[in-house]
Amino acid sequence: MSETPIPTDVPKESPRTILFQFVVFPLGVVAIAVLIFFLFGKLATDEQGIPDYINAIRSGSSHERWQAAYQLSKSLKRGEARRYPNLEHDVATLYANSKSDDPRIRRYLGMVLGQLGDRRATPLLLDGLNDHDVDNRIYALTALGELRDPAAIPRIAKAATDDDKDVRATAYYTLGVIGDPSAVPVLANGLQDETPDVRWNAAIALARLGDRRALGTLREVLDRSRLNNVNGMRGDQKDDAMIVALSAYPKHAGKDAAPDLQLLAGVDHSLRASAAAQQPPTQIGNLP
Image (tube, rainbow, N blue to C red; front, top):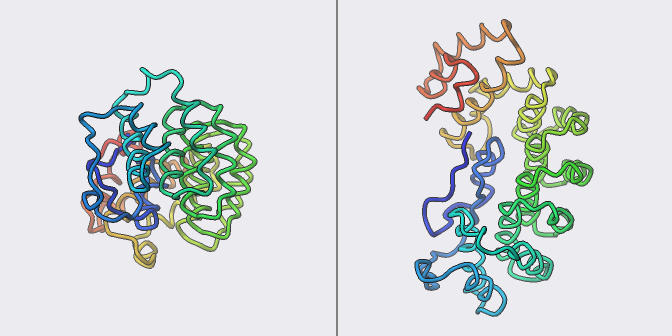
C-alpha cells in the first residue's frame, strides 16, 4: 500500500489510538497528541525552509523547536531534502543531543532520519530504542523500518520482547518491512504473543517472508468477532486489518483459503472487506 502523509498541519491523534493502523501498513507518519497547534503560533511554512527549521530546532523557544522538527519532517515529504547534502549530518547531531529534550523533538527528528534513508543513522536510531519514553521507541522503530538496514535486526528482535505491547507490535512490523530471512525465528515466536494485535503483526510480517506458519494467526484477523473483542479498535481499523490479512492469506493458503474467502465475501457487513475477499491478492492493496 502507498504511504499516506498527515493531511493537516496539526497531528490530531496519539500513537496509541492509531498504532495498529500504522503498524499493519506503512502510513509513514505516526501522529502524537498535542495541544492545538495554532495556540502556539503556526510557523510560516510558506516562507521558511529547511535551514530555518534546523536553526529553530537548535535555538528556538520550547514550542518553536518541536514545531520546527515537525515541519522539517513535512518538508522532506515535499522533496526538499535533495537541496541540502549535509542534512543527514545536521539532523543526526540534533537527534544525538535530544535525549533529555522535549520528546516530541526527538520523535520527529527520528522520523526525519528514517525519511532521509541514510543508513549511517542506524546506530543513532538503535540507541533510541533504549529511551525510557515508549513513543520515542516506537518512532525509532518505524524510522529503522524506513532504513531497511539488516544490521539493525538483532536489536529490533530484542525490542520484540519489550514490556510495552505497542513497541512489540511495531518491532514485528519493522522486521517484516526489512524483509530479511534471519528474522523468521523471531517472527515465529511472535505468533505466541498473548496480545492479539501484536500476534497479528508478527503473522503479517512472517507471511511477507513466505512462511506458512502465519496462516492460523492470519485467519484470526479475518474473524470479525475476534476483532470486535479488541478494545479501542475502530471499525475502519478492523476493515484495514482484514484487508491487509487478505493480501497475504490467499497467497499462502492456496485453495484452502476458498471457504474462508467465500464466507467473508458473503456475510461480512463491511463492503470494503467483502469486496477485498473477492479480489485477487495482488489487487487488494489498491482498494479504496
